[in-house]
Image (cartoon, chains in turn blue, purple):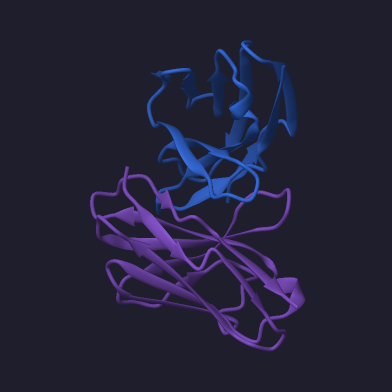
Length: 109
Length: 115
């Protein structure tokens, strides 16, 4: 099985940077995903890491260290619309995704 | 990205009735689809993995006779909640993986309320 941990809540100011950490312990590893989910909606794909290092995509970046079982999602130049839940998910060898409980990010003016 | 369409988006049904939820991949063929359930303020919990042309694989604790899954084609999987009860009220979401094994794409989700 998978054990995925991420903080429950984070608050930041508009225009600031927030880093959401995710640690995992898995029986098999085939990639790590980050998703954004607004209340009452389905998750939307943000990023995918399968090799160590940083993947940058606009205001969002994601980092992975497989040896440490660690990833983070970096949100820059925060906007009010970024207030949402951010889900860390690990894919195993059978392509099944296991999700963390999610981190609720609140952006304040 | 690839498009996965889920229908209906919301449904209210009476206790004891059955509800069918459809998940379609619109612009790609999905060999595997996944069904998740999400309770308020909780993360997604995988219910079952649906493979085209074969029986679904259910996660531990999920009743296969209650949650019937059919994956008759490469573009359609259905989840039927049979004899629904109020505790089945939840947000049900499907996702799909294409033939090339690209990352799963999610449907819009179905909010089921059993009264």
